[in-house]
Image 1 (cartoon, one colour):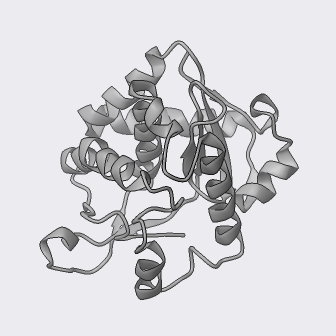
Image 2 (cartoon, rainbow, N blue to C red):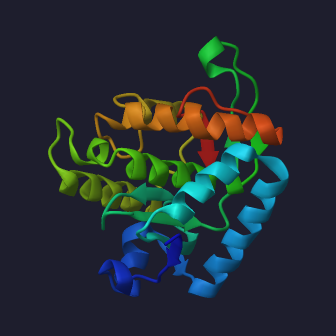
Length: 219
C-alpha cells in the first residue's frame, strides 16, 4: 500500500486543527509531500541500503502509512490511526547532532542530512509494522496516552518551549525518559530505532552519528 499523503481528513483531523496540534506553520499539499518522498528515495538509492530496506518494508505493507508534510511543526511518528500510523514531517527541518556521547567524548554539533529525520520516523513505522503491540502497551496506559503525549510535545514545540532550548536545558528536559513523548517504553523504542535504522544509515551515507537520543538539535 506504501505511503499515503494527507492534509488531515484521511486520519480524522481537520487541516486547521492538525496545524495547531503539530505547531506547524503550514500543512502542505499532498503533491509537495510526494515530491519530497521521491527525493528521499533517490537519496536512499545513492547512499544507503538500510534506508532502501526501510522504504521497501513500508511499500510492501498492505495498509497505508500516512504522511503529513508540514512547514515547521513537530516531526514524529504516531501509531494511530492503525494499522500503519502517521508520520508527521517538517520538510524544512534543520538538524544537527553531537557525536560521541556514549563514549563520553563530546564533540561539537554537526549538521546531519535532513532526510535522515524522515527516515528515522519511517524506522518507527517499520517497528510498528513488525511488532505493533510495543506501541500499545506501557506503564502509562493504552494507546491514547501516546497521542496525548505527542499533542503535548507538539504544543510545546509550537510555543518554542522545546525546540529553542539550549543544549543544557534540553538534556534536563529529556532526562526522565530520554524521549520526546515521555512514554516509559520510548527509551527502548527510540534506541532500537537508532541502532537498527538511524546509525546504519548514517554509517552508509557518511553522516554524523548521535549515540544518545538527546544529542540532537532541530529547528
